[in-house]
Figure 1: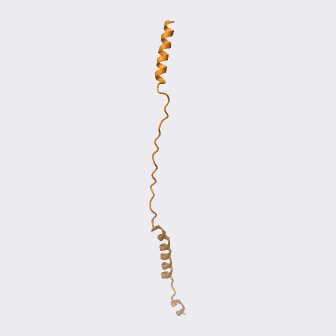
Figure 2: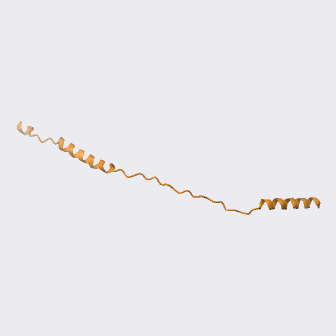
Length: 73
């Protein structure tokens, strides 16, 4: 019976120290999200019209409208 009492006392002392203070919810600190935005490029809208203009210039420059073939007859 003495062993049982010692065991009960030891169990009671260990249980009280294990529960001392109670439960505390963890505090989670939220860091703000930083969004890195790049400014819009103004040159991107000029590429397609520039290529179209170069294509029109190439078509006009390659237009061969010589009448030399008709004068050979």
